[in-house]
Length: 259
Image (cartoon, rainbow, N blue to C red):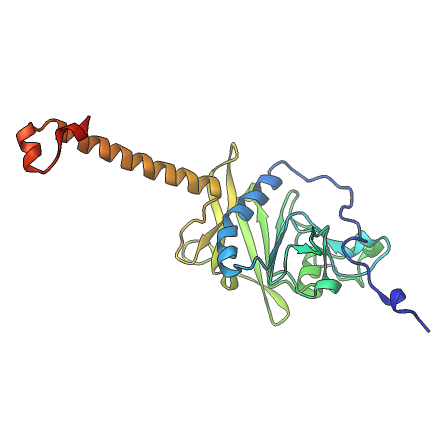
């Protein structure tokens, strides 16, 4: 009789958390930070209990293989709703579908080559050496509702939506963005300066078309608002100082308050 331990599938602590490859270019890491930082306030509103998980260049194990990493895809960015970022008080080394069961709501790949890898629909029955196309895995195996393919070189993003078990290429709205309805946000391209680089960055907007800001951007907006208020107060003070003591008294203002 087979023991229970023999039937136990490996978890994230028993599977490799890297295949040893390098990040393909220096833009990928800041791009991940940008979309993570700006979406966090939205997700914290949706999940005040913190029950959501964001992966950045992390493995999603969807099948058992030998070696194990052949059974994983590592999207540049993905988001899973209703799943805590930790297990037993520790951050996940990877995301293991047969332990979690909940598929990511959206995965995003950052294209470094010609995009063929991200659009590869090769099924297991045709893959040589056990290789399976990313597109096929996300569509047919993991069944991710939204799949984004971002190409900085072309300043574009393609977004696919899973409809009747098949990815349909979404059309952008009037703002050129792609609504991700379950998150209440839109995904699109923003030409601007971030982390010392002027590029067409992948960004989030809210459903009204307002750009979702990073923490640093929000702090800068607040700093500018405070500076504007300070300048207004200085201008008012200077105007009041030009009045005579009698005029200030008529306004109920003590001249000494202006010193």
